[in-house]
Figure (cartoon, rainbow, N blue to C red):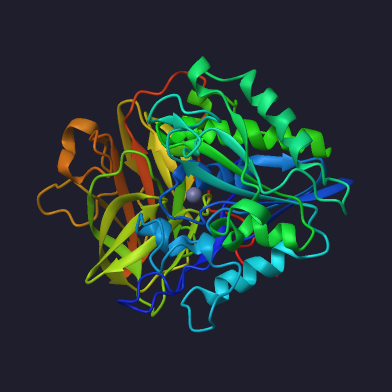
Length: 455
Ligand SMILES: [Zn+2]
């Protein structure tokens, strides 16, 4: 599995959460020509099925023909705050919006993308309540519900190649319904007849697209499901639309509920500064103390997910991932030393060179080889009278569990310093690994493949 780390430069004016959380655009280009799809997630911050689907599209798919443009985090500040909209509902801001609206710049920027001459089809991803049903069945299944549906504003858009919105969506619905996990999860087509019947929806993103002659579709997964099931249905629907549009793709995880769950929850990394520290986001402790961050006015992080942010809270930082509030980081600020990019270790007796930012699996014991001029600090290990912990065989049982970075008490920090400067960190992982499985190496990332900025 290839995990691409991309650059994410976040500048936080302290106390003003969110204003600098710009949305990202990821352009996936096929080697063969074809149409360009624009997929938008996170217009409302509390609909994680949609924005996780878009994030996986942006990071775990490869496009072979045509193009996929993905904005996975349109309303990033609201995503971080788990709010439908910190400044009202962004999906009602596409008809008229005063320039004084705090979201005016984002709305203008996404409008420019929607109307980009290259864009052929537009998708807006939502998590909707209950289950849309054309007749009233019960309080959860009726015409006023939105979940499990493809939404169109009208049947036909006369002027384009993909203008038969109804036909494309009926086929998508049928394709999704061949893979529903239970009969009650069936998708349905919902036509809001916006132009005639729905003044409220005339303020929406898809209707804006329609009025600019761009075929546009809403996809709604049901809020009755956990996030990974919503994401599963979003991806099923998007793949069906891609197939009909002639966009060929590949993905690096199985499109099953557990495959999607793993992709969302297990494979996400955060790298600090130049990659000398990298963490996996699963199972982190609520607080990581004495965390060696670089003395500088701005903090740089990278992640392989566009939904990760580092947000300041007074004298701490918190890692956010979509709607999830993860670990607090209590920083200790250092100048950084870049005279070395790694260290030599003995892992269960075997010599191994490890780059800073990597994690290594240990069965029984490890030892960091002594190197002149450098000092090693294994967090959670103490030996009286020793400041430098290189040259010592260290077993899991000698480490104080409360210093592990994971809740399970199995992963520990090995930090290297040169005089008073921080050189880098390696993680030792005492979790038993299935044999033959390569450890996920968080190797210091090379140049980024995907830019956060759009153009
Ligand atoms: Zn929504």
